[in-house]
Image (cartoon, helix red, strand yellow):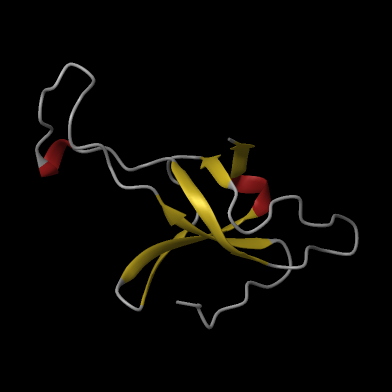
Length: 91
């Protein structure tokens, strides 16, 4: 399913990864204790600015800051729109 959204300039649209429901030792985490994910997949990217071209591409898995970006809900799915500079690393 293709999204009908095109980020402008150095903005990137990211689909956050699902929050962990279980710890490594098998303890189930309740909904109110789940942390906000800091990892996601790039769904769309803008063309960049004239001084700096965009370095991430669609399909890249990235790490971003805990409070980075603006939350969006499109077609029933949660997304984050952020500047490329808010992305910390490509995994």
